[in-house]
Length: 286
Image (cartoon, rainbow, N blue to C red; front, side, top):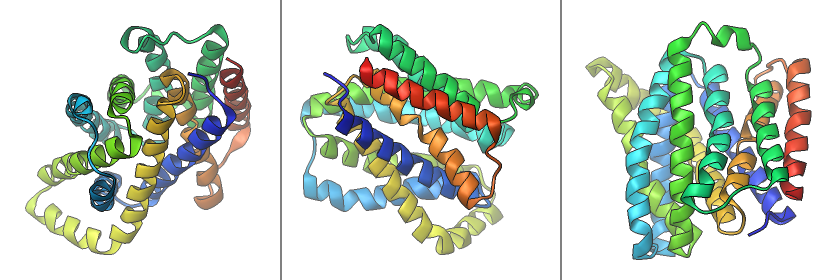
């Protein structure tokens, strides 16, 4: 399997979709609830598509089951990270260090060892993501609980990436695998958020959802597209390379934050952008 330019461009577009639904969450007033609504609406959008494309092969079901269990850990760590730290600090750590862990584990799990050039690209993207996302790295050291949850979630993201990478190859059809995964996975995190709220908080959830569901539906659709593209790409290119490319979403999130939320970009993010671009080129050459 090789990483061709069409696959690179597709994964980068998927990364833009991923950043878009995260930007919607960042712009909301209740990040945990917005995340839950995005997942719930993603399941609603995926259900008719699942009926249309059909179910994946039975060989893929064990991987889907494992992925669902792993995602429960992901949601718990996600809530912990967002409770103890800002999205702008925890998100880059979770997304930035995961591809490095995928690359370390891909040789054992899927028998794909990155080449020297690919390693340069993976490390470059990881460093670039950290530079773009962690605008104030010194502040992160004062949020140890948030850091612990974020790094734990990076490991969890790497784990479900490897599991889903193998699962989608076993399924024979990326669309079938993704739609079933989103339908089954779309209720775990919303139920977790619901269980953590008081009676008044649950009434607030219903009121909040009434006016936010159209935006959440857009976010859920973007989430389906983002992960669907990534898993499709893993059937045509090395999993570690796709995982690294996918995390350029942090760069797109920073750009969207600058354009839509009027956040400062700055020299550090500019340098990080250059490092990410160099990493993408190294991955393609690798």
